[in-house]
Length: 325
Ligand code: DGY
Image (cartoon, rainbow, N blue to C red; front, top):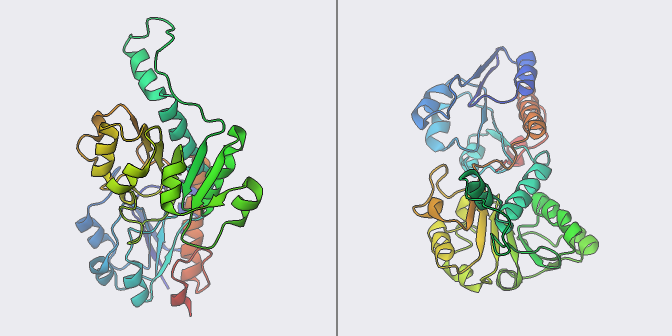
């Protein structure tokens, strides 16, 4: 049997090389950009597997064009870009890349937290503009971390890694989760599970790690901003749409909160009007998993998932295991 795979964007070679050992055709999007939806529609035809990015919309219409498709290997831990229900109905396996990007994403959340709290980007802009005229006692004062309260929304793997990194600053940890209690956080870090309202009212730093779903879309909106401390910072390395970005722009503009550090956006890569003009926000271009080591592991993991399915074996990271039975 001749196996045919399409990779929607150039990824580290390791995964591609592995795929080439098992599949006769492995084609990679030749452009240095995402494919348009219509281009993707054409490219999926006749493929046994597609290796997709979180920016690719995989919906019913696209699945209907992909008559031979057996597996969609998403190159991300999140898979809200895929209509998993529709894939399951067509007995298509969907896989993701959990675990390997936990540390890099938690590191990114801390990088944003430091950048916004210690005003590093503002300082960089000022220095480059030649406006650093000497040390000044009141220049770019930020906030301390030691002893403050860190609120984690979504205490899965990445939320837990975020909390673990707070050790050096002796922080109090609050968390919310949709699943069962996080024993590691509670027993090792004295973390307390609270409701969202308590977390928003009591936290100095709030970091979002909950996956995007219909339950979490716009979880943080005008009401939630009104509960937060005026000195609070909001960090998001999960999915943009968990925050109502119009409400965020208003909250930042009106100094309802002190600042935000964002890696993800509601209508990525577009920004909500006004966001880029604000000084009290740090904006990163979705770099959570962007380290050489992590992206290499992700490429191998996605390839292993595809190979397993095409070999009629259980893939290591299936998100719709019901199709395997
Ligand atoms: C993911 O894998 O879902 C992350 O958003 C990548 O940064």
